[in-house]
Image (cartoon, rainbow over all chains, first blue to last red; front, side):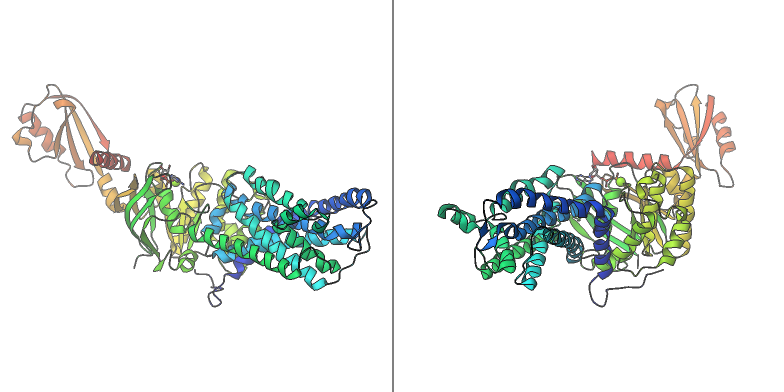
Length: 264
Length: 311
Ligand SMILES: Nc1ncnc2c1ncn2[C@@H]1O[C@H](COP(=O)(O)OP(=O)(O)O)[C@@H](O)[C@H]1O
Ligand SMILES: [Mg+2]
């Protein structure tokens, strides 16, 4: 009673990628109200607090009205935190609950596992990013100079940080650790990375320090896609994002090769 | 060719604990094989290595000729696993979780097959229920359905009846026999001897990470057919009288007891002859009883021998 083989010809187990992807997306749709409402509310709050309160003092940055200026940073902030949260939880939970046995005993390659989990996590955060963009449009007249680049950065960042989250989810051996990296590293780096200001506005010393922060390059590149202005060159932004993506890919490959934290 | 060949398989966990040492085992195509052993013997470790959940420290395993490391896709596609722990995704429905498993194994959706599997496991009425609403026994059924979702040629059941009600146990045995009828090889682990006895074609006994016996159940049952007659003597004996050398006799309890082992299925048990011989030798006894040696005895005996050998 052998089943019909699929993927034998292509060498890839696509039904498995699809199954994992849809399973992960299922969680998002199950809590769709929450998944969609939360970013809408937080975006609104940011606009009220930053846009209205601060924006009335800071009139424009690089010729862009402050309320509009913070849109790319807001999206990036959510993109990073959501990508990491979704991907780390996605793989950590089956490890914690024991249901990972099924993934480990199925004819799935590491690449397929990553495609399923990271693909779903990235999709979710891109959706949230787009929801924030749409919500922003209610508060400020949007302006996107390079829409294709905007989407490219959105995709690249979502994938990169979902991979990063996936690594955290593999590494964590408790819920505290799952929260630790986002809380202690990513959120501060994002806030200090120019989500709500241009790093060029900082005094020279802090400006130099900021350039050590990888998130600066993401936000700068993303902002360039919106307004055509940037703290650092678009090429540098792309290169840094690509570098971080490569590092994450390397780490994931290493993890699967050694079975680290997945198999005893 | 056996459907599963295990050669010189060892596993030392990161803790330094050696859970398997040099296991050799061949599972024949289409048989029901019971791996019998006490808790901590290494049953789950062995299964988890074959299924790809635990990495072996050394040794090789092939499934239907495919190496589990070198050709893991082909090896794993042949296998369905029902794990020992009841782990399920709380929010999924029965139907979705079983369909998900089929997808993981690279197969196209086949609602007909899923329906037959769910019906065979009395899960059809529960197909839209979320897993968290199900009882433990129902969850176990779901795990079996998941393992069968991709039509495996080999089914592993790791302690399938631990904490399971009678009804499910019977359903499960019916299912296992049906599967064998379709040519599926079934390997189950248990620490209940009756379970191995009831279900298996062959039985392997594992202890402390070593396989200490593999035998056809029928051969084991022949050993089971033996009985022991114990005579409580009036006066202890130092040695067996030469006249009784023809009987399978042992002295026990410091010469207080005389134990005679015989085959209940033989034409002559030899009991009459023994009693005549005893009275001729002037040996008197004041009580007697007989007992059947069970798989349990054999098992306990083996385990003791093994422990003694290890000292
Ligand atoms: N991940 C692990 N790390 C360390 N020791 C383990 C691990 N898993 C199992 N063991 C040990 O290996 C031995 C065999 O376990 P197991 O294969 O589960 O036995 P069984 O299934 O026969 O009860 C046990 O002593 C157990 O404590
Ligand atoms: Mg076990």
